[in-house]
Length: 119
Length: 107
Image 1 (cartoon, rainbow over the protein chains, first blue to last red):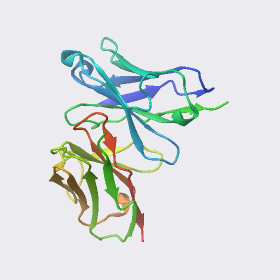
Image 2 (image 1 turned 180 degrees about the vertical axis):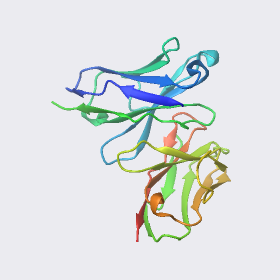
Image 3 (image 1 turned 30 degrees about the horizontal axis):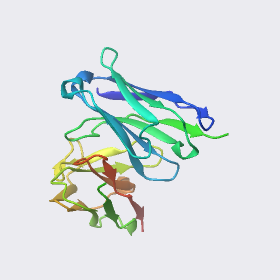
Image 4 (image 1 turned 90 degrees about the horizontal axis):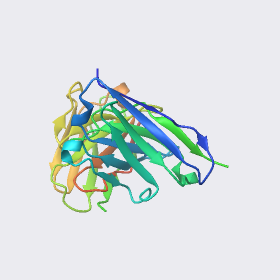
């Protein structure tokens, strides 16, 4: 069974950093691009960023709202994707979802992890 | 950035009704579009990919159509479990963008 499990969500103060993890199982992780999507309380879905598979260069793309502050990486040996979030702002408060895919993406989602940015 | 304009923002319908949701892209995106259903407190679930292909396991009452800039999601006969919020997503050009969502409520 394909499974994605996010972890690392927490309550943090503005300006601080946090790293989220997405642990994958049930598929060959290295064969897939991985993505992060977030949803602020009561709001819609927002694509955060993507990392391509190593065979496609392993490069990353980011939403304008997080570019320069967030970075995505992957450890194919552990089947984990990471979202490093620096200089967090109150408006980064959201549930963060991990998803997979590039050509026809987001066929599988994790359950989400809550990040709350507040003083 | 490509803007996805989704309409309506909400609708009220009865069980058995035919429901249509539309997404319009600000520029052509071929058929690089998916439709997602989300229920409160849950992760989204993909219903349609490549604009018109039904995700495995999704009931056949769901269908998608369109290409270029105009796309529709149709539920042929609304069922009680279909009351949820629906989103389109374009993945043709970064940044990928979602529509604003359509909340389908019980009339």
